[in-house]
Image 1: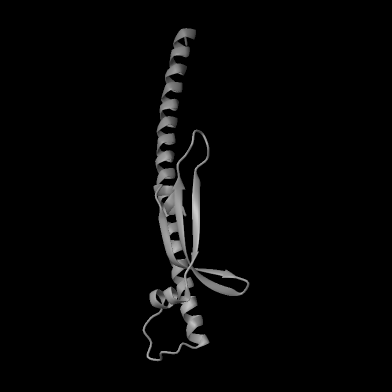
Image 2: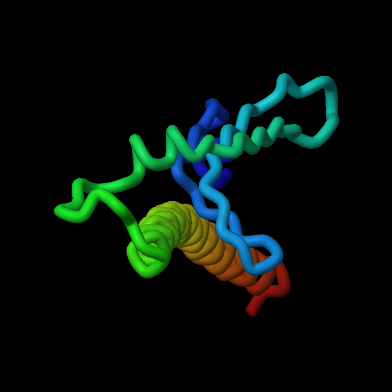
Length: 135
């Protein structure tokens, strides 16, 4: 979602894990920015698609020596997908935080420059006032 907001383009996430009622589902998520009308806030269309079991096994599973996956193997695959999803989310948040930090640093430098200019102007005004008062 952060990428869609930052870049204002459609972002797709495939193979995300969604846990609900002690069950994990594998889903695809699309985030689509909608056109802005006037002064309204930005709107996004978020689509969730459940991946069918056939798609899940063909796209998410790894080759195994044993063709029958037991509950343990299924749980491991689910946890690996969740871990991958979490890693991707963390990478996205880290990138967003770094961009925000850069923007804040730029703003800080601008404020410091403005402050220095104001100090200089203030000193000049004091000198002029002193000259007018005859000091």
